[in-house]
Image 1: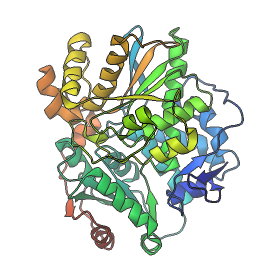
Image 2: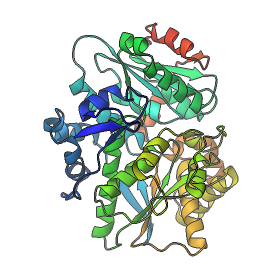
Image 3: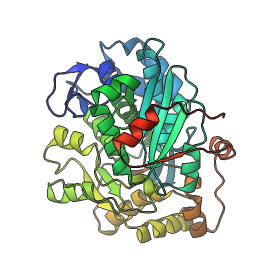
Length: 430
């Protein structure tokens, strides 16, 4: 399949788009709509992912490797946890860094290992609002010919997220930026727009601007949908907590490709740019607001460009609502009181939006409702534990990372500051 820029640039092969990340005209690469719905087969996540993604990779040099890439990347499951007969959490936090970003990051690493040739070092450059950076660091950690440089907003990620970002060492460098996630994202985009800097350091992207991260995220929606139908609960609707909009856009692409999905609702925190777009039809980036759901603190989501390019009139395509900090905290406490399940602040946004949908009598759907549970609650223990009155133990992989030393470097929110760090070779022992 050829993919084209949202801004009209010439189509390129999917593999080339994965390597380039951002299109030369500054747009985001988009796959063409499929000419026919995908016939989904298999019962496992890998089998269903293979069936779903094969049409996108058809004719590409990665096509013969697709199954191997999925097998390497998806070594953990996306579990549907039913809270009631018609409500479930899609648990996307069973990977090595306890967040949904592990699926896309590990698939991207598997792809890049097969695409990057030669003996020169390729720099994987990524901005993170909390979870992306750790997932990318884990996926590329100690891979020869790769180094990872992570930019994150200083003081705007949870303490455990910050520790995680700096705990990989070796070929991973964490830069704490004096600014917001939008500043981090702006600097990364500026770096890719600088042809000299990109060539000098062989920069590649690992943000959700990369199709290598976006496409594999479609798979767990297909897996959850088919599992829901097989359980007799009908065609599900999804509520997806969203920051940069990549995860929600993957859900929409999955539905477009033929996955049985009814309604798609995005849940944001106090950063309302996407929700405002859905309400008014007009997109205007907003100043980032710091919230307890920090991984969603994005005022200018990159994937809005994909959303508007693909669907134009968004009425009937996707819905949305936003949740403030008080409602997030109340959602965490209420969910635990009613179900005994601890959820992270981002998942709590989705649960609260679904509660509102049902409270106003607007929960009509072809089947059950599924909320994407995007991160393990132990990553936000300072928020979650006081609300539920219990300790939330971190999963083993996260617990091990938290025992390691953590190193990060403070930089100003400028391209010049990033360029200076890219010219250095930071190495710390693991």
